[in-house]
Length: 232
Image (cartoon, rainbow, N blue to C red):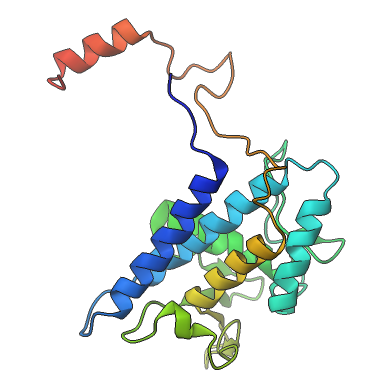
């Protein structure tokens, strides 16, 4: 019988894959692809799984603690934007960390929506066309040669992280240093003690429900299909 991986193993894979891949790229000189989009997506995966884990605490205190730890690293993750940027599914599968009564309007909601959903579905962050016809977008960094993770915060927080830029045409960009984003989330997970064993992760499964039209076949039928397709 197949089983889901232990939560601590999942976090080890998410964190370890980021760390090892970043440092491997940082060790290589030359004009290489630097993983900007890949690392942004991985950081958002860490954020989402952490939030899904927090959701198992019905009191909301674990998510509040996680949010406080993230805000302690950089309160600008929770800057209030003019209106809603992201809304959880209905019914919600998880909530994002928040520091206000309007979590859907905080910068972290835009980060999650534009980076996570953009990278997952089209492998670039989503561009927003604002009400006045100007664009809003995140600019993502990667593992430049010599920039190992251990050095990212060694001299203090880089000033470019979450810095806004207004272009000559009026568009607004916010720079996201993906190594800083990852380290902030990783350390917030650790400081909030999310992996203490008291929380459970609601794993995704298929079919989604008993009435789903998907995957409605037996092992015998599946094996027959795979055999006829030359998979055995």
